[in-house]
Length: 115
Image (cartoon, rainbow, N blue to C red; front, side):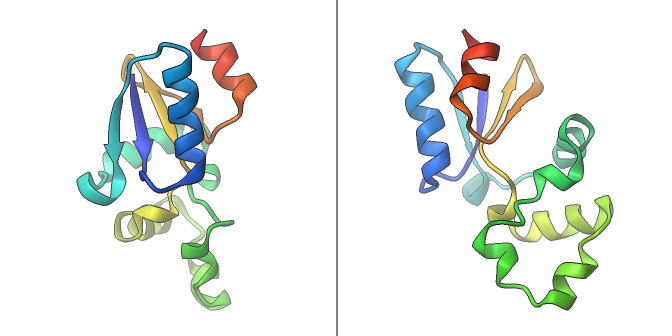
């Protein structure tokens, strides 16, 4: 299992705590240090939809002007933006057996899919 995120994110910390407390072993992939590929983003878009993978509620996106935000409106534009601004990726993302299965942290979803 692999957990994607950034270490100082509270939601990522909650997911990590849940995984540890439930005996789940995982590898942590830090977006900030290791980056992410367009191919990986495309996989996640195919699983969750590109609209959900970009975190429009986060500060990184909110700092943009309304005009800049409006231009990030297609999968290609979102990939370009997220490659340059990895902290705007919704997190955490959990992959199991090489497939993305969870986006964000909701304890009931983790319980249902990982128990």
